[in-house]
Image (cartoon, rainbow, N blue to C red; front, side, top):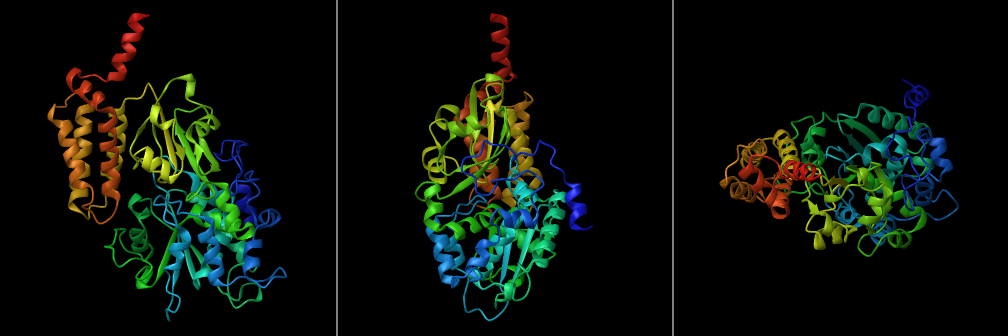
Length: 458
């Protein structure tokens, strides 16, 4: 299938989640309409100018590897996959004088419930990821890269492959790029839908053709990664931010956000809002503003709670959430949760927290790879207990048992999936314990009881 056929296959329908005018100072989603994903449109928007700049192809002297890394450090860019680790610092860990092959990997295995930002980046602005990876490869002296794409988004994989063909044909990938001494080969790899492969070492195992299970750390990927070689792994959105930083400078990017939280962030807003979708806003934007951009709570109902960073982040009650700003520090230090993947799940006053937790617990029980006993057995226990409570068969002792099981999972597994399963449980019990108690005692949801009381009163 050639590029034109793929272009015609993917027509914008008007319901794509990033095509709207409610972004604030967008850098990644700016000017997208669903059809202008190709290389000519990307170049017209300033695409590949950053790569040309570092290679000295626009009249300048170019940038050294150290200068590129220093610019990224100055920008305050932090990993957009969830951990928020400083990107420039991570790049500096790559050994410079390693005599063998080094690898660069993009983690596009987007499987966190509620998250769809990376899918839209790769479908509608794939060249910004390619350019960002090429710049990163130059900065770290890497000649081979892979983009590991989630196994359940087939069209996105085909779109990215088409963009790779365009980049190779234009001379932005391959040997001696634009006549320089820099060579970089980039390939796309398709996963098979397992959530665990979003964990970086499980991703590497899968990329090597093995079962996707996390590795012990240390050694870390920077010293022992893909095929046992030094490897740097970043998220799709992280790479997509790099070209803007190189074109405009690290300080300009930092000033788009707030101290220690530079630039813009894409939030996938879903749940009980009028306009669910992806919203690119500066880091530090008040949650109240983000909710306003999404049209407010659906039907004018009252906000009850928000999961601010994907299903693995603890829930935050409405009254606290409305005081927070959308950045790593505010959500963690003031909200007691995590910014995570940026999947903002909004819940109104019709939502039963027990039922919500049952959904989340089932997901983690289903997606556990089974390698670690606390996670393999514990996630099943959590789901079965919450499911029992939801169906009116809970016991008073179940609440303390839930908290105990969650506590015995956290910090006792090879990867963070165990923690991801336990933290929603502890968050729900911390803020909405009364709903669990009510359902155990009365065999019906507190939300249903409240609705009945209102109806009777009326």
